[in-house]
Length: 109
Figure 1 (cartoon, helix red, strand yellow):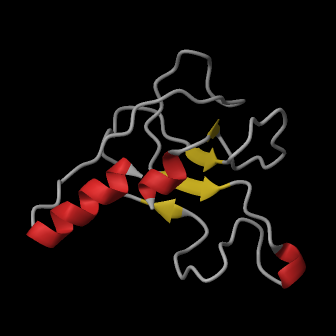
Figure 2 (tube, rainbow, N blue to C red):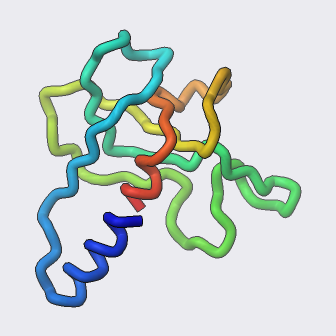
């Protein structure tokens, strides 16, 4: 919420930052514990309105693609798709979700 408010103010004044760096902790089945992973692709893993005819992870009334992708900044680090959800993931069966956490999708958006 604070980042969104700050970016809105920056946009209003015409002084958007060149980079927003989110540093946090996440789980992974792909990367070893303690690894640094530079994610540049993000999905909202708990968005599932398939009963309404939408694709899994697609957000209603949002024209953005299911996977938000930004440019790679840290090219010498491993990269993974970061799946964000509002719950603790005890099991995530989507093999594309390489990093699991709770906030990055909203920041990427």
